[in-house]
Length: 142
Image (cartoon, rainbow, N blue to C red; front, top):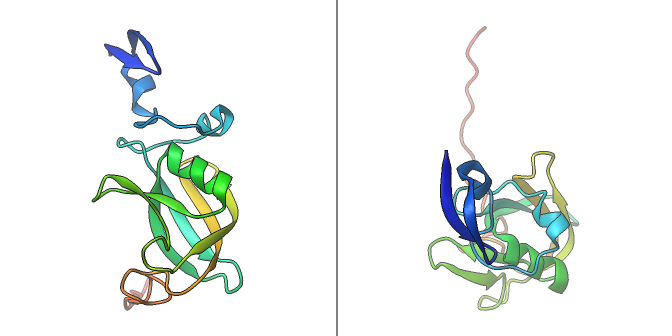
């Protein structure tokens, strides 16, 4: 399938599949990094956040190209809020900052592992991690 589209200031007929994995908002992200991302239909990549010292998985958030660019260039974890449709720097209003130690891209390019020094609670509920509601696992006899 082909469609007429405008992308990055160019218009023309391109395969729809080429449009599906493009950034939604303009970004200053290094094009070499951007080319490695496999985005959702709304231009996002999952960001799994873990604490450097403890190794605890703290939260899951979403980044687009610009949020990743801001994270990599400022050292402050920056995400895209799907509900508010805006960027947010973790801790800007709560004081519970995430100072980025490293960012790794998974093998498929559809998830990021962001390792941080966490100051205060990571979860908006005030808990250390968003993953504090454990579910019971029952094993069936095989």
